[in-house]
Length: 338
Image (cartoon, rainbow, N blue to C red; front, side, top):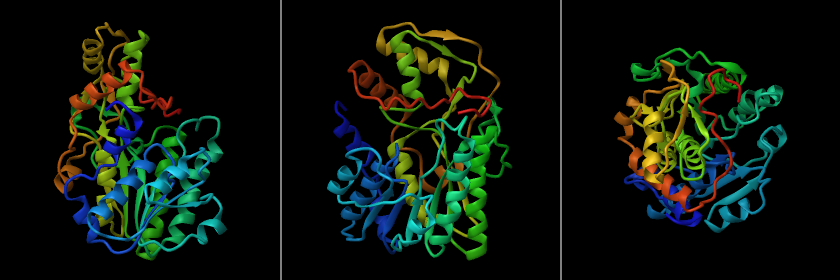
């Protein structure tokens, strides 16, 4: 992949069987918070899968669309767009009905120092949405940050583990889950809580963070020495498939790849591909933020893009001067301050 267009085509390419699964669902698909890092390619994948299935059902992208051009790009891809501030109750209540809703809006980066806004977006906004779409299926994006740090050799947190969020951002994301759970139980709304960490592609993500430090010769702190990742295209497909498993009370699904990655090993792999020696500091802690996605694999199979392939793609992208989003994941954070 050499261009953003090629990358976004790959990220929005439906995985095998997705078109058939979506064809079995009734109604339109609405994506709330559609203009973020993941939303545009998720919307395009939904449109492409429905087209492949011969369905004329609408894909509707809802966002403030504050970034110039983001709305036009989606419209050209066949996605109907609606500008809406999801914190404005009247605006949300005026949105059209949709049988299938994917909720992606929220706040993470810059949440330290803006705690009130973080809670409003991550815990108040879901209540407005859950009330408006009480008759819809809802996939609510969440995060593995609701779990505590766990031993590296544990295999990661499972869905059965009790949440123990660290810091206000993570606490607010658990608030989001609890609000969706409350309205699911109250109204019988089918919901899937989509605990994702970490989606990666070539412009951002844990692997890009590591690659850029190796490429530029910056020190890489290994204290948070392990992580899980999943190709964003695979995460997109799983999110759409999660509409079919939504239930009341909510289904919970960890979404990530099968490997517990050693970031030391990943840094050395980038070093080989770049012909540069990584600058490593610190020692790996014996705990990390890790999720066990065995339930996801049993439902939907393993990710279609393996980690070593992504590493090679990222290395080529960085060496070629490919664009990045300049949004570090802060995966190394251990105190919950983002």
